[in-house]
Image (cartoon, rainbow, N blue to C red):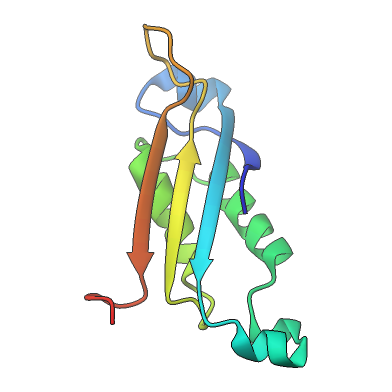
Length: 118
């Protein structure tokens, strides 16, 4: 999923926590979808609507200082589905308080259910 949007109060600076700002999140899940496809069965895969709601709850939830921490919390939610082997999470913070022109602050991580990945 790309561009899951929510307002959050994440950041190091006090005004970021007080005022909040818009964040966007991209999530890629790695899982075997053959059973779901063979049976056309949603219960054999991940419901992306539920995943999107869970991601929004994390972004709109408890503030953290670092975008890296936010990305990790979202990865933890994505990995909660038993079928998911790995998750790529990208957090966009386009309104970050940076003093030079920029398009976006982006943190991307990949997390596996177990390490090292098999």
